Length: 206
Length: 246
Image 1 (cartoon, rainbow over the protein chains, first blue to last red):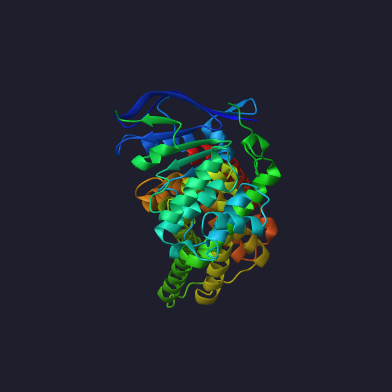
Image 2: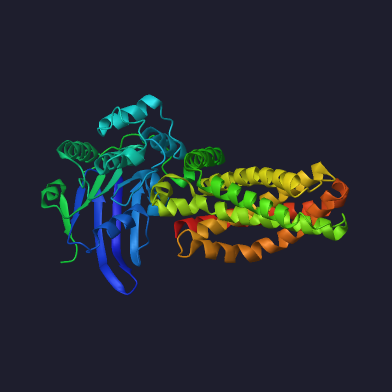
């Protein structure tokens, strides 16, 4: 079973201001798209459209998997999203957060699997700390654990290494390398060093 | 180039989500919200404080009024009880969704949970908070305002039915107002027309239960409140997906 993302003639804006329009592309499993552009060029908006968190003003976005086409809002099980504006529950510990999201997704995950995921993103031994005690870099690592919980074939990463130290950035490198072996990765960034992730580079606002 | 996907660990589309999955996810939302509430105690503190203040004020303010236990007197006591109950409830019931919006956790929840599970989880939490508030308000009014309950079973059923009405009507409103400005004012404005009809019935029905009227006398009011709760609950279930995804 493979995954394909189709974007056909998509336009988005806020009120009267158009952010981008007539955007079309197709991505298949194993491909990575990097979306770059200046602040306000619509990178985050594009990723929110792909995640189904926002509707396009016009055009169509669809994921195809197993011969079935899904609107992004129906495809939440296919998508992992990491973004600076993705917030998890500050009153809960990291382990409680992941357990909660595993439960609502009806994943049958043992505690050991959650611990392994925390270890993978570099939060081993900090799973019982509440998020209110986390630094911004640790919170970013936990966003990756949240996004990878259900092993999604599509990973949408908005500013993937923001607030991360070198070791955190190395973790992201490894995750992207692994994900691109089988799935789709879309990275939105204005960091020139992150252009290297892309098989395809889409420059918005030019 | 075709790449094989690893087997996903969870349901990948809503089409694969069964009723059992939705109920389990709703329970997870409820447990998460209850745990968060017990750690912050925002809604519980606000509701209990409001109920206690009202009961004390009514108690002190009516100490020197020597009213006889007439039908009007029971209606006044019942009205005061429901006013205290309603205002205390309104201070806390919108928290479930408003807190998700203010803490910006809505997107994470939207991507992970089926919409109906979110609604059911929040509804259940509101019901539990109202049950707690109903018990506290009743005890405070019985002790401080010297409310005498003629038919305890009918009185409890009336409170439970009224709570069900409040929860089913206000949970969807909380979702609607969570993205708006002036949340508290908007919540009160939208709740008013929805809650007035059942509250009038609940006040009259409760007055009957304070007298020696048994379950039989209060049955009409209980039936109305039950039907109203079912109607608003079903309508909310049908509308929630549109509210949640916009």
